[in-house]
Image (cartoon, rainbow, N blue to C red; front, side, top):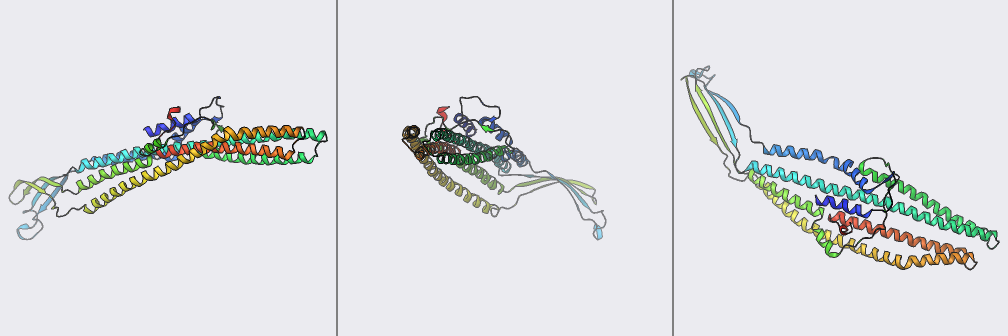
Length: 415
């Protein structure tokens, strides 16, 4: 199914890297393969498919013929004592289903089978999307750990300069203590990130019901991408899995209504038999035919209930389409806002923050600036780097949510 393949293609494009994979690092392709093979939510579908096949087989079966024996005029009084006057009839009858009952049952079972197959593909998309979402979280925390290491490196450089100035007698030892405090705070943050990273790896491997056998994942948020347009979003909503599910339900219900209507028609029961009269020592054929009188539709209430259910589904289709459009517009607006902020941060704020950090560090080395000015500049640079990282992560997660919601790829041209 097309909806399944776009997810794999898009997410593989997002995480293409220029360095070789380390043996103990997990790629997105490997995560997808593991999830599709061993995800608990997908394991139930083969059983459901076999059940649907059995239901279709059951629907195709015709009524079995009936063999009957009837004995009359025996064990009575007078001439009917014993079996001398008994009449024995051996009959063979068959129910003939009219109104295309069997065909409509098979049609409904087939529609149920198709819906189940489609639902299996929708569930695959959900599993892949959730796997990618958890994969993203591991990537985010890995990059957060790298950002934390950069902070630690800046503080190490600052400590080296402070020690040089302390040895020269230019500043008191308390300045080394101030930098040490900052280092310890960053170290505590690092421990917290390591703990969250361990938790995120376990959450990712839970998608295939296993303990994590990898130390990290491959990927980052620095690949270029195009923001989808409003027209792309509007068009994609009509192919959203949630909307298509309702279409599948409507088709299934339409087949069910036909089956119920067909079931309401009367059936013909025909039979043939042989009747033997003991008293006359005579035998003859017996023919019979019967059909119930349909004075009223026995399934009238069920048909009206199914028609009302179809009307409900049509209304749900309209509401779901509108809800998806509103949600998609909201996500697109947030993506555009984060993207504009990210562009401004990378083009203007980060270069100025790096320049300030370099100038204040050089000024402190020459005795022009105080240590507090240097630490403030480093902290401001770190905060901007952290914010840029979070904005990149938010953009990718929102694009992932758009693709999960609409079932369409917006980055296909980049692959």
